[in-house]
Amino acid sequence: MTTRRNYGMIAIAAGIVWLLIQAQATDGRSYAEPSNIFAYFWPTLFVLPIGIFFHVAYLYKRTKQSAGMLIPGGILVVTGLTCQAGMLFDAWGSVWPGFMLAVAFGLLEFYIFGYRIFWLLLPVFVLGSCAVLFFALLSLGAIVSFNGLQGLTASLIVIGGLLLLMSRSVSGRDDERKY
Image 1 (tube, rainbow, N blue to C red):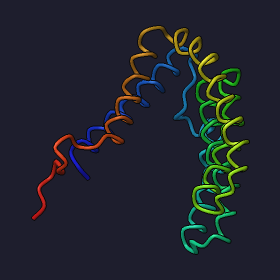
Image 2: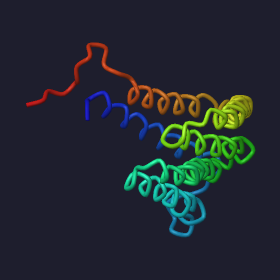
Image 3: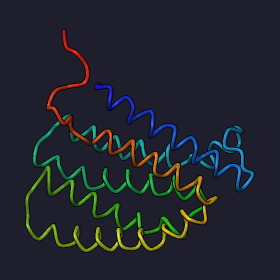
Image 4: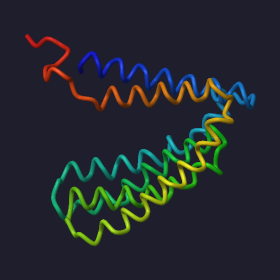
């Protein structure tokens, strides 16, 4: 891993921890209690592993015929992340577009790694653009009201970490030396 990626992962982890601390401070819930682990983290414990299993099963075979496993895999992964955000932040009114995005993501994965049928992009575009539009409209108010400036700052740190992970080196060489 490059140094930039390490900093990106640290920024993402710090931002998520900060968001969790802010969420706990605003509603008084404690996520670390054993009784709350299943109550608040059921998507991570049950839904996400099944979606990841479908992706691993596709990667094991890697044929056009096995690309169909990416549709339920993508839907379950994005649905699990949506449900996890809804549970942690009690933001079900703001995260529901994630369910539309889940279907769009599963179909897009099938298009990219499986059969490239042009008409498959129509539901991907419609569902994806509606989900992004609704997320933008609903989440803006939730972020601003979520403990004001601290919630927005933590969200910006997570976004900055993601940008660090996805950015390429300007000079074209790795930050780490290879021996």
